[in-house]
Image 1 (cartoon, rainbow, N blue to C red):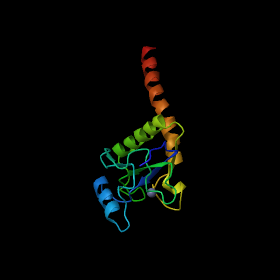
Image 2: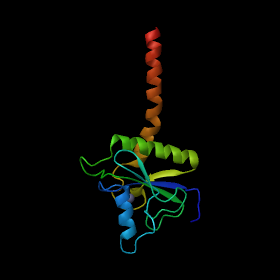
Image 3: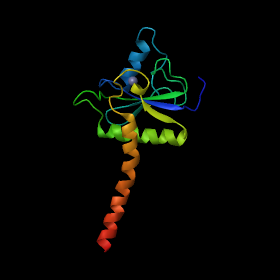
Image 4: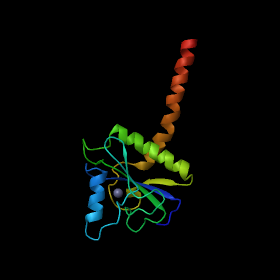
Amino acid sequence: MLAYAPHTLVIHHSAGLAGGEDIRRIHMSQKGGYDEIAYNAVIERDGTIFWGRPLGTKPAANAGQNAGTAAVCVVADNTAVGKGMTYPQLETLANFVRACRLLYPEIKVIGHRQLKATACPGFDVPTWLRDLETMEAPSIWLDSDTAAGSDG
Ligand SMILES: [Zn+2]
């Protein structure tokens, strides 16, 4: 497979609780199925990563729009109470996004539903990204504010 620098990272949820190994088997065994799992990475319930297609090779998760993209899927149904992402999954997803931005500084990060009419990934990715960027600095500043305060 020809490798490339992806211009867009698309975030998905699995809409179920079956793990990466099961998703891989389903993708490869379905009629007209794939020769590999559709995603580049699947984030398991415990936050570990199940690697699929190597990053920088074309995924098969975004019908008709896969060229130049990367696809990550969290094992969760973010539209169902009690089945949403776990805290470790959120942390891994945040780190995955940061790693992709280091590897591919120009990469755009979007949710599947920004490409087509679907609920996937079940949360608003632009809002989450904004929170991710604004929440890091305050936690650092709060620590140093507290330290400065106790000195005074
Ligand atoms: Zn999706």
